[in-house]
Amino acid sequence: RTIGLLAGVVSWDKPAPLRSLDREWSRLVLPLKQSAGVPVVPSVRAGQKVKAGDVLGEPPEGALGAPLHAPIAARVESVADAIVLVKA
Image (cartoon, rainbow, N blue to C red; front, side):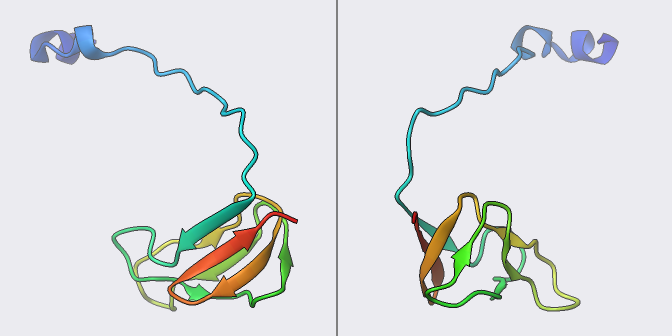
């Protein structure tokens, strides 16, 4: 707090409540490159059913990156430069 007062940022330090979106997603396109690291190597194939939280791809061993997870339960429509999920 003291550092915040000295830096003049206290007036900007406000809570940011999380709002849920009242929306149902029917189709999602997930790029294989999500971060500053390398693109993930897909671990799923077209036609495969996935659950929310399943790993869709992982960075190559020894490379900087983060795993890509399915945000919803769906069926994989295609895998190319991105993974396309279609809600089942």
